[in-house]
Length: 88
Image (cartoon, rainbow, N blue to C red; front, side, top):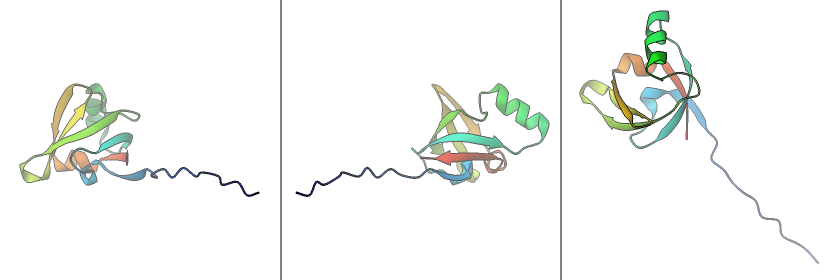
């Protein structure tokens, strides 16, 4: 008698910059690699390691509108490049 075991396949999270995350995709912030003043300001907005964000839309010039809870922030490409995330 052979028994079959079921296997669960899960997607492996990918580390990338926030600018690489697609519209509608969720990500968890892992690190902010910006100047201390910029890092502090992003942290005050809630954009700090451990925060879960969703890319709501693209903006002209390559920026993105990032949703954190019920709040939306428009970030430029430079800020997006400085935020390392784990995309899901």
